[in-house]
Image 1 (tube, protein in one colour):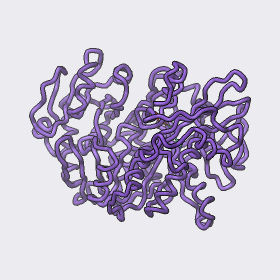
Image 2 (tube, protein in one colour):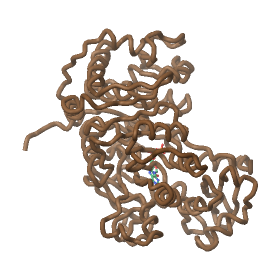
Image 3 (cartoon, protein in one colour):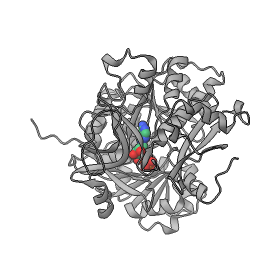
Image 4 (cartoon, rainbow, N blue to C red):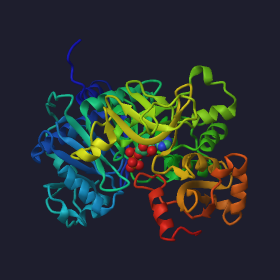
Length: 541
Ligand code: ADP
């Protein structure tokens, strides 16, 4: 066979040759915008020329601080295909974290959406390597800004040629990078190679994984700054799916309107997004969602009750996936095997709520504390370890932390799982979130899913709190649906759990809250809850 480099150029070129007529929809700050992949291709080339003009060379890091929109999609290909490295910046990081990641990656240029300018204005004095800021406005005119060396994206593109000879890169060259928020210490950088992204995209496109195809209308709600929106922009461009980029308006009603208006077939997001949509539907609002083939949910555990309600009441299919920044991210996805499709409903939904089976191309093992593999019995817990062509082999410029996580060629995920006889993994917890009670482990994820099955509960999360005798005990934080606020007691929640979980799993307390704090990528922020508890601030609101 030929020695053929697996690079993003192949994805971009296939799109150019085959899908010039297909559409991209982009929700901007001031208006909705649409164009074709034909126009997209021209602008990607103009952008490549602009990068050259700005002095960006092979291997240079270029930051993006942007929502899901067409300009971000242009950067997704223009930066890596010229040989530079796209560093997606998480717009929900604290200022000191943003300063850290930009300096650590040594970003040379930053492209920023106009409404996110204030995030940079406050910190630009501390950014040591940035030479240019390119502001992505809908108008040519630049806003007043304190940033030095600013340019207008649209102005720069206007003057740039529409042709560009993309180089043939080595498949091992870095294409993109993303920092993951660590529990302690600074964020850790993961570098994605062209080869990794290419093979990940193939796996995502394959029928038993995301199965994205030309006829799909794909709407990534998961931010393009979070693990490459789970690879969906790369795959959509490659296979020619229409993309619907929802911008910054991510409230359930705006998303439901967009699904209806653009006839979205596949959308991707974290569970809180879909739980929000479900609440709106449950309130009786009517939308035509008949175009939807599936909602892909990942990033944290999808509650079984949510999957079941979507399916049984609204005929909507939820596809559960699991991954992490270090794994590009897709690792597993739950497709129910053909001979399991007729399982009784309760078993079917229990399976659908598992995280799924390993993607073709990856290898996994689940090990106990002594490094021995645990049996696939659906009961024994162990840490999930991974290896494969899209699994990180190190953290960027962090030899010590790399050595802690990647041992003997395996990434130790820190996720505690069981695997059943059919090979479906179930994430019990992140190792640090497990509640360790009297030498036994309580899965906080399992408990919260059970609580969320209570009809009055909108959201629930469980943390371990220190206990003199048992070391730790579970504490449940619960948000009630509007109609039930003030009408449900602690005891009712505990009674509901009594015949569903072991007695010693019952939370010691239930705290009703207005909202559960979320992380920068929309997950329940258990670290913050534990801290609030320690400071005596976790009380009913
Ligand atoms: P961050 O570390 O900033 O939260 P990541 O996306 O890298 O961002 O987080 C990856 C982690 O999220 C995984 O290690 C796992 O604990 C959790 N996770 C991802 N998908 C799922 C899922 N489907 N079910 C349960 N947990 C998940």
